[in-house]
Image 1 (cartoon, rainbow, N blue to C red):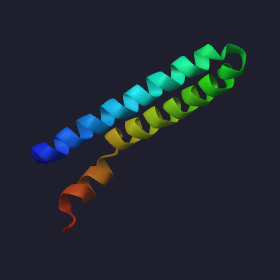
Image 2: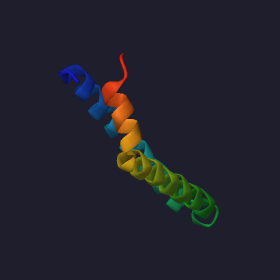
Image 3: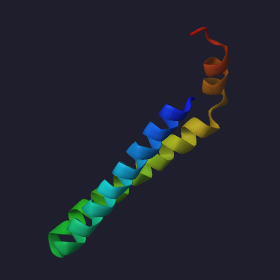
Image 4: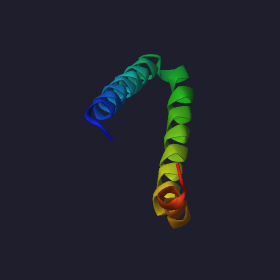
Length: 70
């Protein structure tokens, strides 16, 4: 991974984090109805963490990633 790719990922990560913070602030501002969005964000976050954990623990995918010709 070269430096430009790393800078691009950092920039996209900052934008995504800023967007999530803005979403949370907006949902808290409209409190009673905003709970629906907060629950949805929690569900998406939980599924995202599950996918990351499964990918990290899967040795078979790592094997194919390292040995298959590109």
